[in-house]
Length: 358
Ligand code: SAH
Picture 1 (tube, helix red, strand yellow):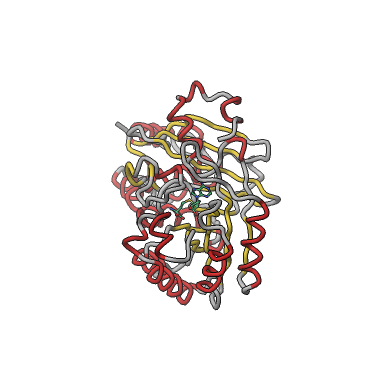
Picture 2: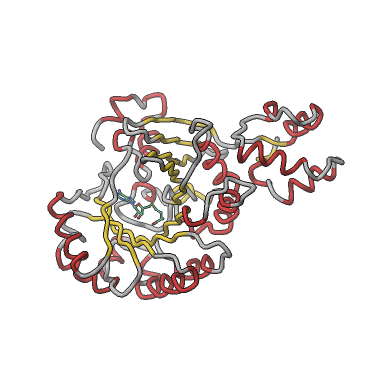
């Protein structure tokens, strides 16, 4: 069984080539094919000796997942549902916005954090993704772009809790960041977390600090314990302290995310409490009106409720923005398409099904 090359792109691969007597320059040459030239098969690596290409295909496969579904939205958003080797499914998205080409990738199959409004966590966590499976999403999405276009931004906001799979994630992101990789600046790579204080501190030790987004959704432990179950173990004070430490270490403006659920966390009192907690921080508040998830009882607030919430926090001096929804017609948000595929099976995933309101 060939092993997944994207899992062992670094020193392991250098050693594999050295054992077979190949010169040192072969490893970076092959990495360039994979990471920069968007190559999908060893036979395309035209400047490698035939023998090496044959040895590579005997020992390695470039991809380990199967594309179960590929959807293109009217607004240019594209979404891939991938089936990983042991059968689980994950999803990843390419978003087009002006000159930006942003991808959103997953870090785990399922999620264990217990956010009650999120489709990704409904069935709990299956497992963390391997290093190669994370890198594979980046490379598969990069291949959707025409050759003259480059990926400009990465957000780790797909399925799973990235800080619960930190070593694998950092390894994959390093290839995205490195100049001999995809050369995407760390300033353009955002990791979104439910807020795990110890892992946030570990992330702060990275030599190239990434942008950090923390999903708050509530400004009191009483409410957050209900909406984000893992908060019962962490608590808001420790999360905000870790966020402040991250800011001290990285000097990167923090982002806080807040999913607005009608009647639950969108009232003026919630906005006031949130503003009091965030004021005096160099932070951006990203307000995300809830995206409907079938079978979950939560509702999207009205535009008026969203405006009122934002006005209150803005008046208190907080930078706030409402995150625009993209790819609605292909269920690009947060585990929604994966659920449809699981429920209906890929062959039944018709345009009509995709366009029905979730
Ligand atoms: N585990 C990470 C990444 C999750 S997804 C985290 O918690 O940040 C990225 C964002 O989408 C999170 O803020 C998450 O709370 C939010 N989200 C999840 N389900 C949503 C839904 N149905 N509608 C709107 N936002 C949602």
